[in-house]
Length: 323
View 1 (cartoon, rainbow, N blue to C red):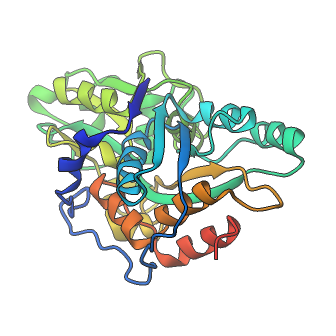
View 2: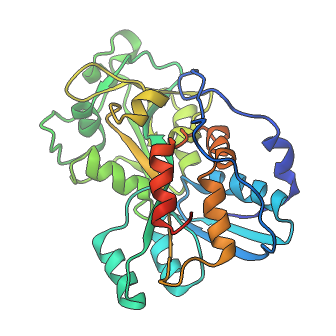
């Protein structure tokens, strides 16, 4: 668990914009996104409970929002996406970040309580990365190979993989064991990877399940034969995001490839909210408006994810009842 009471210590970090994407290219924020304009009378407390993948980004957003509204307090808690729906249902959170879509049973539980469905707001784009140690020479992997590495059921039809030689590496790498790092079952990233890469197959018992996204990357950093999956926003200098091939050539998780979903493991990152028939309360409304503004999406870039184009942000504001 990572829990943050947003404070001034983040201020200096926010002054340094991170303009480079996963592979070093400059990431651009859509100029069509609206500028956020402060409105009077916004105060109160906002709780965000959910995704660890989005934890750092929510922290960035909360700090920037508090600069605009000093009378607002925001608490961010990132235990995993599966904690968001119960928190929204119980009313202990107004914002439920999730790195996957809600499951049918989660939506049903919400609707049983309130009589209407929760509202999904896409807030960022992520190229879910397969990371290897920076010194690993592997050039690319196919989805079938990734499935064979992480799954015990191998629903993509590949053979079991235990060494890097079985993935085409030679020399001193040929017999080096493949060491697996992944997320725990509370994680939306765990569920997304299971569904979209493993075709809902079972994970290998060899996967070392980590409590957070950063822990996955740290494990791969420390082990030459390590491989793990995590959001592109957690990339460090000690790891490399491997290009992934589905049916064609390997594709890197760049902004263009993620935005057009040609990168095989691209996804939206979401914030779920409770929008009653009477509309959002002023504080939640303005927070969501900020996330979907030019300023909010600039924070997305600072955290290493890819910003939404206005073609996605506009419909999201409409779904939330924000004009």
